[in-house]
Structure formats: structure tokens, C-alpha cells
Length: 351
Image 1 (cartoon, rainbow, N blue to C red):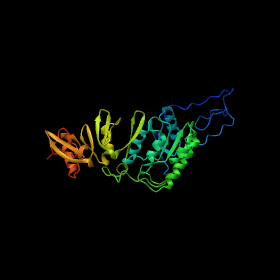
Image 2: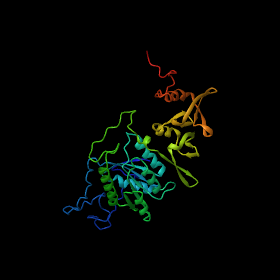
Image 3: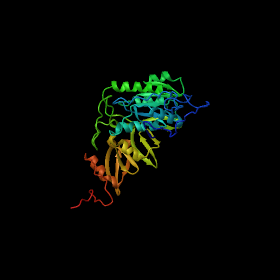
Image 4: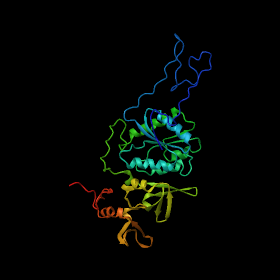
């Protein structure tokens, strides 16, 4: 995933200017149009008119756009065309639905991250396809508008049934993209103010102070994790996950029905799900705090018990995380992590 600022080229390629095959090479030739160089002409000869310049973006209409396509050339071209529109401030890209969901949930959970205003989405992708992803987005507290971009014209009815703003056919044309952005800006101006989505023309709300977030969507919204298994994509609600086990660069999500392996490091889930009640108890384990029913000594260390009855499970708590977990269970915030020269109760301050 990368962020593409307006005015650059997503693919890094230089626009090709078609030369003239005429005897003199002057005057308007095929290939010279808006965005290409204009022929100068001979002295005293009338010059070709200046190409029209895009009008500046209206105040408050700067958009953050997410483009999703599993084919890299198509994704780069879409990002480039979107970045050329003066109303688009940032273009984020994702090669599949899993990365798209990570970006969207991250933007809603972090008040300092620009919220995604519209998703331009391919339909036919491996794993979770575009229509399935759109249905997942519709379950979010504040779903972004979706514009489908596809080479197939047989899914338009399905697209509008999931509430698509527009349905664009490849190869893309700038004027059709502009029309989709027109609809997005109109929807943004018509809806009531939302966190991270000020109405068009309204001053931006300053971000919340560090350490404070007002009702983050990650808490109010139950994130869905897409899991691939034998060619089938299964959607696992975060609320059904009891604990997460680290397995290298992967994480195994344990639910009451079984476990699922996803290519997400546990450290990423720790940061992402902290506000949703997940706490690190060991370098190998992240657990759902509300499910802890017991913390007790066992041998030379502590263990936590999740749940009761035959489905209960016990997991080790490392010495590094024991004190912090005790404070959390007692309703107190955890102390800052100690450095190598800190004392047992926290940093050693100079007297």
C-alpha cells in the first residue's frame, strides 16, 4: 500500500508525448491534448490555444480515496487518474480486500489519520471479491461510498443492490471518474457531520489530544477479519475471538469453534485492537480482556483462565506483563514499560 499525493504519477512513469509525422511538425497534432506539451509554431504563425487548466479544488472538498485492485497495472493507472483530479488530496491503494479492510479500520480507529471518503473497487478479485467487500463495508458504523471499477458489465445490478455510488467500466476515462467524484462530493456535503468527515466547506476539527479518543469506531464497530481456507473466504468477527497466538509473522485467531491462521503479526493486532479490549499477556499471546475469569499463580509464574466449563483455556502470563495485567484487572491503567535501567516499580527518577 502506498499513498499517492495529487499531481504525481502513481506508476512513476513519464507521460508519453506523441510526435508529429508532418513535414514541419508544427500545429495541433494527434496526441497533443490536455496534459501534453503544446507545439510552439513558426514565427508569426498563430499558435495553438492553451489547453484548459483544471480549476482549483473548492474549499473543503479535498478527498482521501482508497483504490482496490488485484492487478498492479490497473491499480497504478486508477491511482494515477484519481490523483490528477484537483479534488483528490490523497490516494491510498490496496491489492486485495484484506489490505483494504486494514486501511479502513485503521483510519476509523485513529483520530489523527484521514478518513477514507470513497472506495474505488474492482469486482473480480481472489479471496473476498469486490461485492463481498462492499457488503462488509455496509456493516460499518460509517461506511464510505463505493464506486465499482471493472472490465465486466454483467454485475451492475448486483453493484447497485449493495448501494454503489457508480459503476465504471474499464478502460477508464477521466470524465467518468470525475462524475463519480462529483457524486461523492455531493454525498459528503449532504450527510451530517461525522468524526473525521467534516461537511464540505467546514473547518477541519483538530485531532484529539494524544492518549484520548472520542468513541473510536474500532470500539463501537465489530471488525471483521477475512480468513482464506481452501479457496473459501470466511469472515471472522473480532468479537468471536478469544485469544490470538503468535506464529512468526502470522497470527492464529482462536474462537470457540476452532482457530484460523492469518498473515498479520500479533504486534499489529495489539496496536489495532487495544481500544477494543485486547491485552498482551505474553510475547506469544493477546487475549480478550472481558473473557478473563481468573489470574493465579502456577509454578514459578502466573496463568490466566479464559471462560469456564469444558471450553475454558489457561494461558501463561510472562513476568514482563504480570504487573501491568494486575493493574488493568484492578481497574488501574498499566504503568509505562520499563527500560533496562528501571526499577521494579517503574523508572528510577533522579533525587
